[in-house]
Length: 313
Image 1 (cartoon, rainbow, N blue to C red):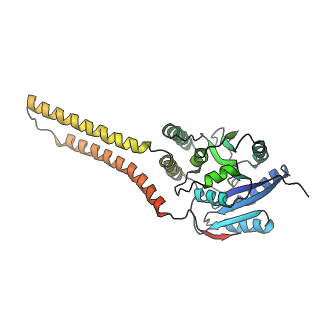
Image 2: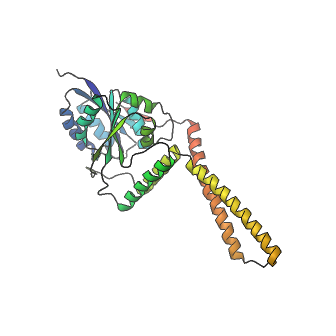
Image 3: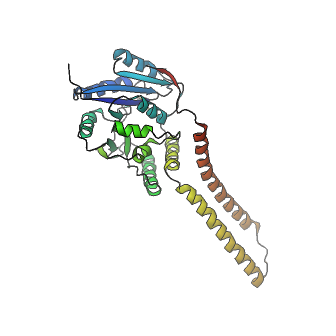
């Protein structure tokens, strides 16, 4: 009987991944062979998939019921809910988060575990060394997002960092203590602190299936990240209103002065319409920023659960 020195919990959120699951499990098992002293525990989270993802997970569970577990949501609650659910159920002293599409290389697992076991780090993260194969427009906006959020937020988020990371139990407990409803895991991983080392690798294509993340989803996700970890947009809205007020005051002084000195010439309506539209646009922009924050507060105070479990095994 082999001697087990530690237990590794693998958290795998899944949404319409019936093609990728049969490829993912054997690849991780290959990495497992290089870690004979480590007991593996799988937690697959089916995030309301509409294909045969749940059927594939049940097959894996039947094949290895001792180590393979799954949770199935009542509907699609999003990847953040899936991550949180998996972290809640993990029982290992080391926990790793992975995507099922094999864009997160399983052969990194032995090295990640070794670095953590040495005790010098609390988390071994990964980041892409390049964005090969990614549409140029997406790469441009991704880099822009990281530059922006790191400039306006006190929480540093590493450019190209993946959710793929192995953490100690202490760090995972800290993450679980963050109970907010509007979750942005990349920011939470950094916000809780702990010493992290990043391993780089070249961008990899999906092993099977198609991604559920489109440009609009990523844009929404990035906005949520900015709102969750910075109040600078609120400051922008406040200063924009202040500068508009000052500008309007100076304009009034100029109009009165001009009328006293040169008389009151008849002004054309186009300029008036342009001014009204300009000021109205600023007001709507500022209201939109404030409304975004209020919307997040609204979701928080309702205290709805992050997810609802339909089936678990």
